[in-house]
Length: 273
Ligand SMILES: [Zn+2]
Image (cartoon, protein in one colour):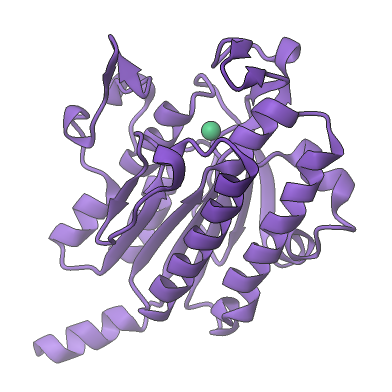
């Protein structure tokens, strides 16, 4: 078989798109589905479930495991900073899915993946908003707009794999958990999901394209959380919410059964290799 044919065969497999929404939570989504029409549509089309984490619901660690396939004991990356030093990609001794697939000649893009700060991008030039820790309304909106626009452009390039992550809901829920304000931001997120998944026609190419929409953990009130991920009092104010072990998942056209964050790595590998 000539090189051209191999390439054509690979292209026919379509794009595997992983949309990460840090801290997206069923306890906000389910009761508000009448206001979240794109989440609703996605849930109707796809397979949805709650992933109950067996590991600690720490963003750095969960996103890391999701894209390297290793447990926290194996990847040993548990925090954005250790001994006052920011942990960098090079400090984490693993191969991520983008490293593995790029070596095999696949076209892979990753945008704003928050296993480190600032969030990591692969094959894409992207400057994260607010060092990946957007803190006020202006920065939240900016992240929402910029990640959406860049992701749309990348989808049009039809890569084999695209991973894009929004971080803003994590930040918003830490400060505003329990307020209607949180639902307002889910509505804004819902609009963007509509633009990315439905307006682009991404799911209209038969079963060629694959989709995972996933969070790294859920959310709950600060006092209810089993693991405290931040001090209650910060310079931005008192925290009202913290991470919960129940994460969000919807898949479309993905056969691999995802039970843990690490399974995302194996699902991608199985579909693309
Ligand atoms: Zn998180």
